[in-house]
Length: 399
Image (cartoon, helix red, strand yellow):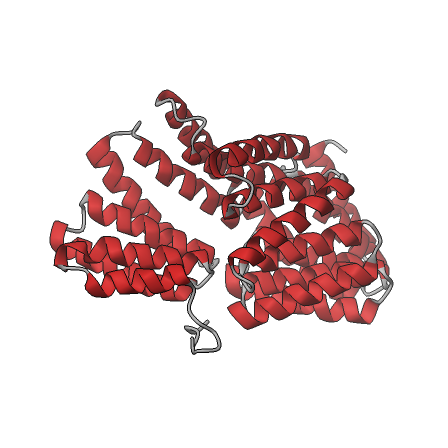
């Protein structure tokens, strides 16, 4: 993504313009807070790469003025890491978070709210990387610290609840995900009001949890409400891609394929325009389109989308991420249905290795892949191998 041009026909948003003016007028002692203010304004409009430049400048100034192990440097490291996460650059964010956490624990102790803030961010990062055990430990510890300080009804706790929703959804705890999302939504309304971007985030999270529980009518209304809030903030905000994917998923669940395809295409066009062809969300949009086309028996179109999804997600998140395995399994299952077991098998072997690394050999996700590998082996006439896969499944799960 490159910085956008702003001319007379496309004036810069007033909050960004004001932040630039204040930075230009700032004295030496005010440069860092003004750089952070400008970064926040840019980030609020989804201009994360421009925000990154500001945050890198702020970090350099803090390290020079206070030292690399100072609390000031830790604050800047955290902000820069968060910005990397917004761009799905998780592996760049991780060492920054870990360095900031080490500094804060050494300077503030284990139970300080600023330590909890970092634990929450790191917990969210671990969810994104598919390390759900570490994610749960970090998020629960963060919430415990906030409760110790009487902050369980504040903005920081809201962010922990929001991240727990994602963790519960990814680990199949769908009822708990919806319950926690509803709690976060009520808290967001109290804290921010119904027009705030964080309220839009809360209702979108609730809608996603509801859709996973097949409460699609409720979910549809909430996602549409969230889209309107985000569009009032910035007409082409990158986060809208995620909202549009959610709405397309809901229509797909309702068997409304025309509406589903239209919203996937909107998400794809917006994602390509504002984030580039190789962004994770663009890959996830291709995955949604592939699923929709497969359900609508458009197999050739589904295959094109699955292949694009796997390539993009693997490039952006790495070959061992569970989202890559998820896409590989979807594609392989379709190939098995089309009697193309020889093409499905390598996808399933790759997915098996990734899921075992992420979740361990006893995960139910691994059990599903073992069953599919047995089916593929049998379809290729390798009966002994098919039996061996099923034997592994029985030994691990007793079924």
